[in-house]
Structures are given as C-alpha cells and as structure tokens.
Length: 91
Image (cartoon, rainbow, N blue to C red):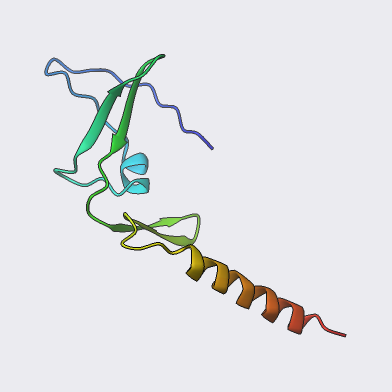
C-alpha cells in the first residue's frame, strides 16, 4: 500500500518525512537521501549504504546491498522448503 502524506516546505526549504516512513526505510539522523527530478515530480529515496534491519508487518527484512550473488542460495532454500512441505502432506 502506498502512503501519501501532504506536508509543507519550511522557510529553510526542509520537508518532514513522517516517522512511519523514516522507520520503514531505516532513515535516522544524518541518513543520506537522493533527490531526483522525475518527469512528474520529485523522487526522494534513501541512499542505502549502511545495512539496516526493519520489521515489515511482522517479517524481519534486511536492507543492504548484496555482497555476492545469492540466487543459488535462494533456489536451494526454496527447493528445501518445497521438499519439506511435500513430505509433510504425503499420504
């Protein structure tokens, strides 16, 4: 679900990013964000350089740049879970 919040720019050109959005993206004091001029507006997104962990609806999510290709790991993990589920429902 996309959150839309109306805010104002103060006399110093600052805007407030609401706490929920800051928490969802791991933004803290001195976090860096990237501003981009888009076709239909301004795009603000975090500069993800320091890994952080957040809770998204009860699921722990690690936000970081991968240090290596992890597709093989995900494939093996998925296959292991499928085998376990198939074993649990065997007749």
